[in-house]
Image (cartoon, rainbow, N blue to C red; front, side):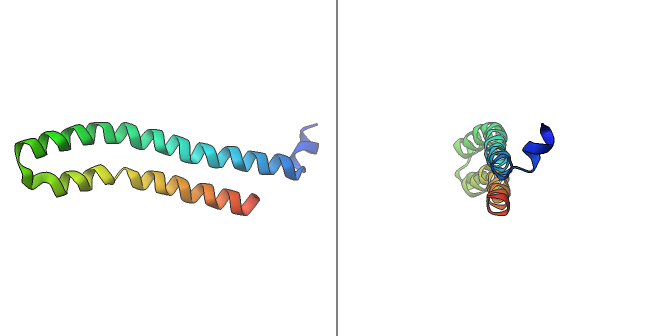
Length: 82
């Protein structure tokens, strides 16, 4: 039964779609968790000294690169198997 499913193109496309969704979703959740602490610290630092605005913004944006990597992986999955 499993051998018949593995050769089916619809099954492969479905697994690729699930993998693409998981790549973006899990990366987004992880980045959101990481940004929560960084954002709070950045707001506190900017409240103390306005000179930390650029540095705080930079540190807040860095976890978003993880989501971009997840998006790239999802595009690779969708275009390679879709």
